[in-house]
Image (tube, rainbow, N blue to C red; front, top):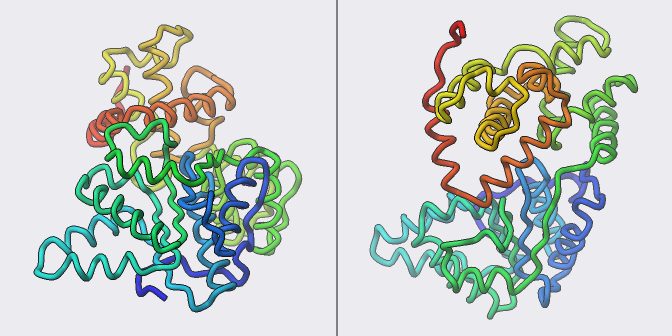
Amino acid sequence: MSDLARPAPPVHPWDGYLIGPENALAHAGALALARGETAGFSPLVVHGPAGSGKSRLLAGLVAERLLRRPESAVASLEGESFAAACAEASARPGGWAEHRDRFRRLDLFILDDLQSLERAPWAMEELAHTLDALDEAGAAVAIAAKAGPGQWSGWPARLVNRLIGGLSVRIDPPSVESRRRYLLDRARSRGLALPTEVIERLAEEADGYRTLEGWLSKVALASRVERRVIAPDLVGSILDGDPVGEGPTLDAIARAVAERFGLKLRDLKGSTRRAVVAEGRHLAMYLARRQTRLSFRAIGAYFGGRDPATVRHACQATEERINADPTLLATLDVLARGWQPSRKD
């Protein structure tokens, strides 16, 4: 058993994990690795947007493997932790020998957030050699990434070839039906009674399980503190209320994006579909969703009364653009550092 940090296994490996068309193949691949079947399955690379359940799948794989084979040597960590371990190894005599002994004598190697290694090219090279050694030893490997194989431009050829040698599976965000099932399951475990209207509103507005979990926590807290029955008006006040924490307002985000793209605020709220305006509007909606966690409905209302489905599409399209064009992340960083207080237009 590795001494590396890893997700605490649940009472049952897949407690609370919902299987649907979005993740069925990825789940089947994880079960195969848990059984020790590596040919054609390892490395298992699951990719998809944030909140689609990639980390939860990896945690279930770890728990399932240890349940079946408690003696297994397992390491589960994030890309940044692997990069940090590489940096530490290079900084002291004998460090690389210890590092390689630590990571190349495993039965199961789990790496989450592969994209974070792009900032550490030396770690990507080391990862390629690590995967070679693990494959030769017959070990199982599972990796999570935001982007799929076709979007790994600039990566070491040796690493790419190793990653595409197993099973690469996209995990899509949960469907409305999956989100309903998740709400019912989590509400039952929390002892919450959710009316049908509340379940439908939450399921329609959410973009993933992580968002639903956060909203359920807020609903439970508000109901307990304010001594209110969980009803549509309570949920509406949470979903359409103020931004979370001390982050930027919708107005601040929209103005920062408009300035970056050389647009007017009224352009983003207007009906024009010019490419530069649509691109800026989509990015502003995406940032609004990530920075404020307001509902699609509330964001759409701000941007000219657009419906929730339009905002959802804008967020998904922007996520795909970011995965395909990592340089867009630089634009997001610049915008995140430049929020300005709201002012009259």
